[in-house]
Image 1 (cartoon, rainbow, N blue to C red):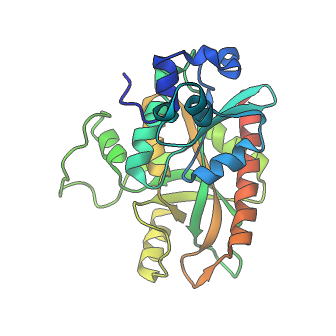
Image 2 (image 1 turned 135 degrees about the horizontal axis):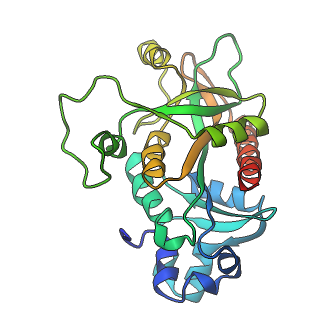
Image 3 (image 1 turned 90 degrees about the vertical axis):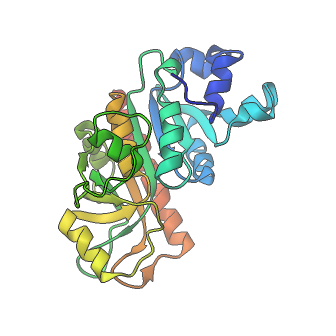
Length: 279
């Protein structure tokens, strides 16, 4: 059941049909491999790395109308023979849940979506003086509406806040094939738990850093713990690779050029992982 017209996929589906776009027609619908990014500028950077790229939101704007572009950037292309979709989830759990549930909706996919990989930035903890450039998620943890719904066994209307909920958030393991493919693509990356929260990961707070260590997390960001429950509910493999933007345990934030270099490495690894997963 479609939740709304937040992306251009729903306008294509309801209007001229996904088959009106050659790449989507060849894939039998929306591409089964999805890269989820928080920033629309990162959508453009991923598209620049794909074969036969198409800014699908712009295409819908030009061929159907302004509203058909949807609310977020979305594009498609190929990595070798594998069709790929890249979508802007915006920042934080609530928009990520709304957008991803629509993008992974079964009505858009001939045989269902196969994998979703988050590519983004994070704050990290590290032993020693040098933080890893990339962090591959082994699991995600943190509280979001999607996490709480999964705990109750249903992806439905958000539950009211429960003061009796466990003090420690649940751990949601990333799909082993996705983690393995990312590790093969980025051998130097750190692999650890990732803590998600709906606020910017810019603390220099030793108490928060200690909480992360207790949870087995070496990084924090804003979306991954929302992606996990949605992917699991839809039977889609999932994972994430994050580019380090700085360290949480000291005043050591990277400049824009270094962060962008790490982001490019994360994009490369995600695309290579999709090539592997597509087989």
